Length: 131
Ligand code: HEC
Image (cartoon, rainbow, N blue to C red; front, top):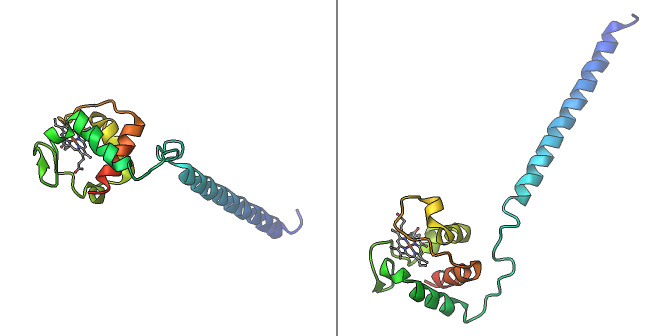
């Protein structure tokens, strides 16, 4: 009962410190979660690029008939967008996700699901990045 003012001041002080701690914790956790986002789904992690990688990408594209719909330089169809400079329109991750499963990104696209292996997709992207 003595000096009630000081006691309530202490309570407020404790609340203040507690509040700051909670905010600090939330910010830290948030930063940690953001820094781990996308980890574990980086297909480039174990991918070895060499001088022949992009040529293999071209061969895979020829084998699967990508050029029926897509033009690169002066060769290919025009049903899909021309793939020159596609790297300026889409990030590597976006290209990967699209080629892996176009229909899970745009359900009504006419681009087929090719069920390519991660390795084949990475080679294709490596080729597209040279164009
Ligand atoms: C039947 C036609 C067809 C075939 C075959 C096809 N695509 Fe597509 N592709 C499309 C269409 C159409 C789009 C545009 C997306 C849309 O609007 O549906 C597209 C979009 C893309 C894009 C994104 C282009 C951009 O400008 O954002 C990439 C990359 C791509 N295709 C790669 C491929 C690869 C690699 C293959 C072969 C493995 C392939 N496509 C085979 C029709 C096709």
